[in-house]
Length: 178
Image 1 (cartoon, rainbow, N blue to C red):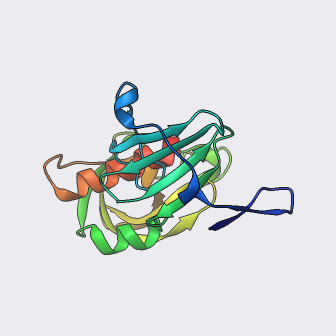
Image 2 (cartoon, rainbow, N blue to C red):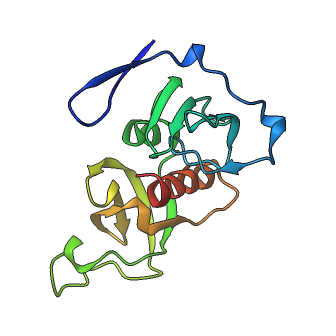
Image 3 (cartoon, helix red, strand yellow):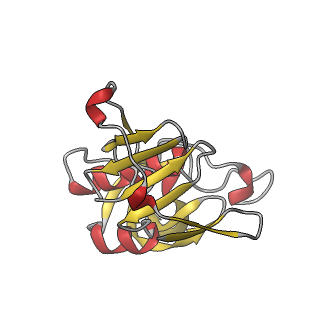
């Protein structure tokens, strides 16, 4: 039994174990970006047409969840990823990155493009926090100077490093599921 807040201040008890879902072989394969870990490993594993419920699972992070017709997700197994803690623990520091996107001027100040420009090469030193607008903020070095910069605007330079996949998954999650 899962108790879910429906957004109207009322809690609704839903027993997902008692709901029948069609077999995934009944429809075409459907792989998508996981809204919890950002990998392209999220697959439809069942559907209940009467209740308009989609059951999905991610082979990367192991989360299994139900999504209703309004896009509301209820996790049955696993948990949502705490990107700040996850990246702090799994990234190998320092690593080289390139500015791949331009943050809006508000990051450094209106009318000020700041000291970091498009295609600049930076050294990422650590994860320094999370921001509501910019997502994960990392401490970077440009030459001898240190700055804080949004990870969503960076690309890992070494595409063969383990950091590349971790940051790529984060970027997919940030762009599609936040």
